[in-house]
Image 1 (cartoon, helix red, strand yellow):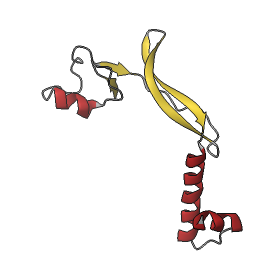
Image 2 (tube, rainbow, N blue to C red):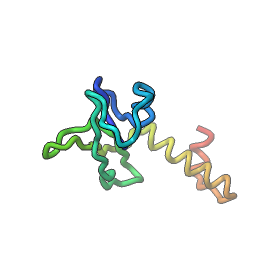
Image 3 (cartoon, rainbow, N blue to C red):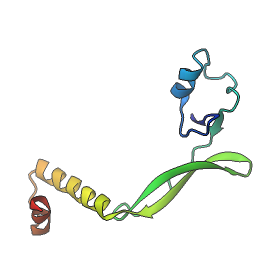
Image 4 (cartoon, helix red, strand yellow):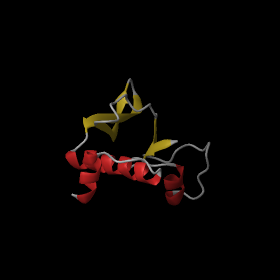
Length: 106
C-alpha cells in the first residue's frame, strides 16, 4: 500500500503509518490527512540512455495517483551504468573492450 501523510511526505508505507499510529492495523480507516496513492506501472523508457524519477502524486479523475518522469541519464549516470556492466564482465571472466579498459584506468 502506497501512502502520503498529512504533511505531504511521500512515499509512505504501512510501516511509516504504524510508527505514527502504533494501534493502526490494515483494514482500519486511514488517520486524518493520510491518503492512499494508486500505484501505476513505470512508463516505458530506453534503459540504455534513460531513467525515471518518481514525482509527487497527482489527482487523476479524482484519484490520487502515482506519477513518474522519464528523463535522459546524466553523463555521470551513464558512466556509472557502464562501470556496473564492466564489473559484471570482470566477475564473469569476460574480455573487456579497449574502451572499457580505458574507462577503468581513467
